[in-house]
Image (cartoon, rainbow, N blue to C red; front, side, top):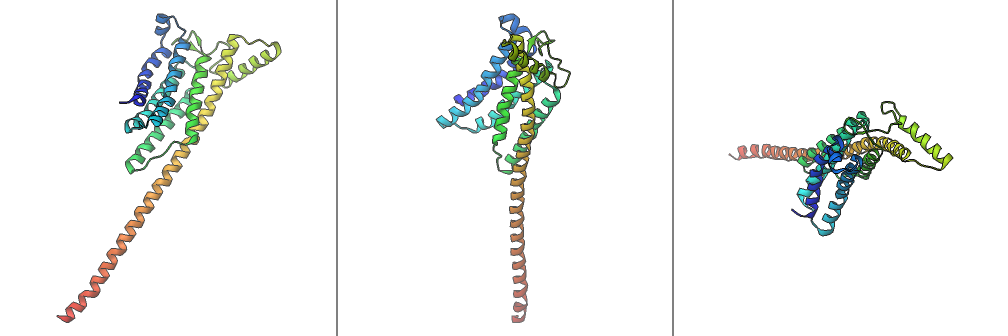
Length: 259
């Protein structure tokens, strides 16, 4: 156990606490801190440990097998818990979250198969940008939420969450009002954050599908190379056996004649 692995484990332990904060009113009632700010502090703090543990591990030369295994698990638990909590609070569309989480399961399955076959699939730049866009989207959606929902949080009152692209329409009205009057209200700021978070979710979905295609392409290429190598070995062994059989057949008549 070293500092990078301890940071990774702390990110896993924050997950249930984050769910409690985002889906219940208890922390806000007990501590007197707005639910949005407390949830945002937990999520952003846990997200920072994702960068910090890798940086410390590389700088100190403490990259370990345990850290390599735990780091993606901690990331997926944190992001999945936050996204599901947002769906429960009607802050994010369920269809987008299903695509994002399904992509995580698919990539994890591919990596498991690749590990069993003896090779690894490294994360691409698209996957890293997808992780960053997820953090930004969740941060903006939490910032854009207001109190009053069944779980304590809900979208801004000016936005109808059940209407497609409603948040974009309201964001446009806030921007036009700001350009005319030069005043940005706190409610208007929340609407802008919520609209930007919903827009960022579209970017997350696009990069999730794109990076998943990239993973599948890499996986297929490495599996194809493995199959071709095995096939060449099998052909070489078959040719060797055939030559030995032919040589034995040629030697056996000469021995019988000598006899």
